[in-house]
Every structure is written in structure tokens, then in C-alpha cells.
Image 1: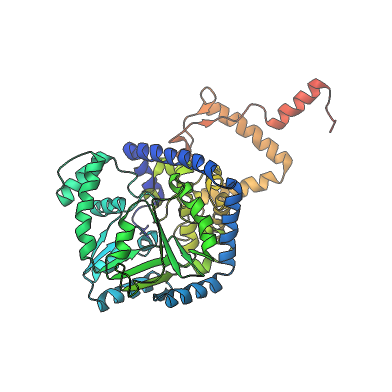
Image 2 (image 1 turned 60 degrees about the horizontal axis):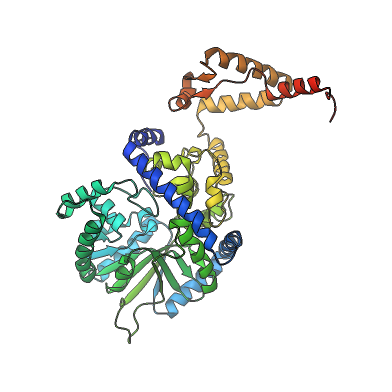
Length: 477
């Protein structure tokens, strides 16, 4: 994952909040995707809620019997002529893929979009072996040229304007400066044709693996996915072990919710089903297919209180709906996986000790749960991880002391009411027209970006008792 030792989460957030251009881009794009998603779900052949329920049931069934489905999938891939490799962690996955490249004298590698390859830092591992690695997804290619990492799991270059993209392409690949999207796309497409035809190895991710047939499925809106998996003589598919569905019928359900949740489409432009390498009678396709099944912490999550996070199908809908992500963007999280999904999956996979801040990067408004196509209870999982961070002693001292004091007072009604009176009096003393502009100490983090309302002069309970007395119903149930 990303190194978190040099800069803290809060420093990354502060830096992100200063980038008004990127914040505007995030806000516009995520609102558009959220609106498109809402419209797309109205077009489902069955009621949208029923389809989501079915999708959730499929994910639950798969993960409940993951060992059986993995074995079935591996056997089916082998029967179709592919080779299956098992990687316990990122280092082993990189070693396996590196050995495939070295044995086959690979010099040029072309990649289609894959978050798992980002997770294990595959590009760096292959480059260290002397391979040239080129991203073929347009957004990933731009990010690679810029020397950055993706800021969204679906649209990696969401934080860049077309003007910035034009400058990157001019500076890095000598494209005549233009801000016309069609011209930029055409220029990159022309350059990519030569890369596809000369690459020795193509690497793709896997959106779904079908256990009964050994089929790997990639879902994209660009033709680079098919070129990457067809033109080079070797195809390596990197896949998290949780990305299975039992049958092709189950796949059809998942495809109905994936594109709608991600980009608001009924179906992505390219939905590719690949079963084995090229047969002897087929003119196109790779000579070898290698499927690398990557654990990298996933098996440790199974059976835990946050195992539900493995239901995720990486649609990005929760990022688009999250008010926190809309403000700070993806890079502030410091992880390959940003937004609500990243705030859960990163500490779940790699421990709360290093990622204790991420579960707190949420307002717990529930928008992520509402849009999740498989109904993952993201707010509930975030609360469980917050509890784990507290148990691990990762909560700031002031907050530990404050919560203990609140719990102690909260279990003593007389003391609690007395504290409320003091809080009401104190907050109104420092407020201006009912709002506090600056709070002292660690509470100042709140008022750096917003005003805090003063406590009401009378509590809700006091107001309710007063109204009951005035209406003559005091004491009645």
C-alpha cells in the first residue's frame, strides 16, 4: 500500500482542501455519476431493490464457500488451457509475474486498468526487472505520464481538467497542444496501436471470475481491454481471490448492477468474457493465459466482524455519494482505495495500527450504504473499525479522556443534566449570534472549516416538560 510515514492523513486533507480546482472537479463529476446511477436503476428489467438483494445474496454465497469456488475456478481455468498461480501477498504475486516475464524474455508490457495491480505495486516490480510497462487505459496512461496515482477507482484522472491533460500529453509524448478531448484521444489511440502490436505481455485485472467455467470477465468503456488481452502472446490476469461468482447466471445479475452503479450505464461498452488462451483454430488471442489469484490479507478478513467488505464489486458508487470524498478527493486517503470503501478495506486488510485515521474519514451520513449495489453496511463497518482503533490505543488522548468523562456523566442523570446546563451557559458565553467561530484546543479543528452552534438555552427535555405543564398534560404517558 501507500507509505504513510512521511505525511499524516490530516496534512494530506489540508493540502487537498487548498486545491480548489480539484475539489470543483470532484464535485462536478461525482454529482453527475450519482444522478446517472439513480436514473439507470429505474431501467432494470426487475425492480432495482430486488436485483440488488439478489446481487448481495450471490456475494454472500460466494464468500461463505470461497474455498470450494476457488478450487472449482482453478480447475476450470486449467481445463480451458490456462495456468493458475496462487499468491499469498503482494511480494509473492510480483515474484510470480516477474518470473513469467523473465522466462518468456518479456521486454514490453502493456496493461489495462487494474486496481489489484495498483495495490501490489506491480509496475514498479516489473520495471525493476528491466521491463517497460505502459498503461493503456486513457486515464491510467495520463496518470502514469504525470507520475501520480489514481484518485478514483473508476475514473483515475477525475481530478485533472482537460487543459491540464493537454499540457501533460504535450510535455510527455510531444502531442501538439490542444484542449479538444477528441484530438487528445485520437493522438493517444494512434500511439497505443504500436504499443499493443509490439508488447510481449498483456496484464489485465479481473472484474469477475466464473467458477463453473473458469471464465475471467473484464468490464470497461475502452477498447484497450480487448487489445491488451488479445494482441500480446502472453496474457496475465491479476485477480483478488474474492472476485468470484458461482455461475454465468450469477454473472448476469452482477453485470446488471455494476455498470449502473459505476457510470450510470445499462452495460459498459466492452464486457469481455475470456475462457482460456487462444485455441489452435483461432486466429487471435494469446498463446498463454496466466491467472494470478492474490490473497494479500483477504483471507484474514473472512470470518471477522468486517468480512462484509469483501462483498465489494469496486463500482465506485460510494465514492461518488460520499460528502467527505467530494471535498478531499482520493489522494488524501493515502491508500490505493479511497472513499468509504477505502476507509474500511485498507485498515481491514493491513491493520488499524497503520490506518487508524481512515475509519474517521466519514460523516456516517449513510449515503454510501444507500447507493451500494450489494448493500454493504459501510457506516456500520466504519463504527466497528473505530472501536478497533480505540481498543488498539490509537485514539488521541484528549478524545479518550473526553469519552470516558462523557460515559461517566452519561450514566449519572443528575450529573449529566448539570453538565448540560454548564455547556449551555459556556457555549452561549463565547458565541456570537448563536454561533461559535473558534473553539479552544483540539476542538479548534472543527471551527477551522465551519462554525459550531451554541447549545440551546433550554434542553429538549426541559422544553418538553414546560410544554406539557402549559398544556396541562404533565405526568400523562
